[in-house]
Amino acid sequence: MTGEYRHIPVLLDECLEQARLKPQHTFVDATLGGAGHSSEVAQRLGSQGLLIGIDQDDMALTAAGARLKALGSDDLPQIELLRGNFGNLDELLLEAEVPGIDAILFDLGVSSPQLDFPSRGFSFKEDAPLDMRMDPGNQTTTAAELVNTLDAAELARIIRDYSDEKWASRIAQFIVAAREREPIETSGQLVEIIKAAIPASARRAGGHPAKRTFQALRIEVNSELSVLRSGLEAAVRWLNPKGRILVISYHSLEDRVVKEVFADYARTCTCPPGLPVCACGANPALKIVTRKPILPTPEEIERNPRARSAKLRVAEKIR
Image (cartoon, rainbow, N blue to C red; front, side, top):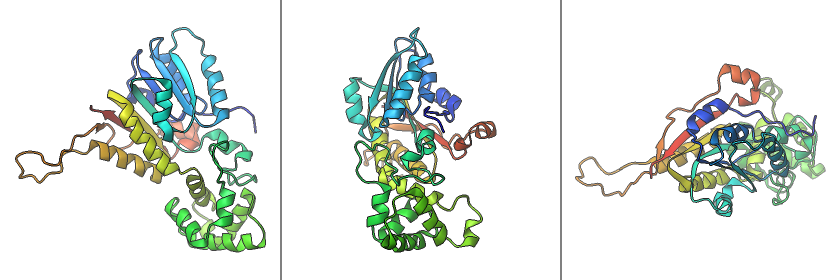
């Protein structure tokens, strides 16, 4: 374990190609992390460009700032780092006082350091306080609070809806029974409860038995899907004509939201074919660039196993 904020950018070359950046452009990294993507973007924008990095994690902002500063100052863009959640993108970009943006990247999911540091409580592989908050300074509800207060039906709904866990109801029942004996306060406690709930035969395949439940709790704690939708919709509003929105998702729920938002803003006329004039008023704002997602190569997956489930989708602003 190390105190260094480590982050290997996923689908880096593909993102740089799809962003179609020019030296004077404004680029927003909505999930700055360790600035893996942004450090490469900064070297392509030039001194007339603007790079805005957004993250709600103080550790990420500190590490990203140091990494970008280490690039030097020759022919680099103006760089502004903003602390916040991309769900509040409107407020953050108003703060940055930019009239519009030319490309924005959302690299979703939990960053490597959040998984690597046990104290953050995201990992089912380390015993730590059951937290899972992306922004502990501004969020009050933890995963521990969820598992100790919600009834079995609501716990089962969260686990099932946010992870497709087939044993969701049984896991929820075991959680409720376990907390009657003692509070569930650590990730290690929860892992053992989940293992007990899932029959041994089912635990032999499909990876770690706690993986899906931990994902579901993390999504609920951080309201990830509603925040994602809000952030994407704001991004569409801020894009300049021909500007591009790039989204890297890591599980089917995220990818579904991305596809739905892109489809909503790319929707064309829905009138019956016989009408001589459009009556529905459809006026698409986006053109979908990637009808099928861009996936990492086998070589990238070998270098960075966390890229395995990544999907990149891209859309372009029409008006």
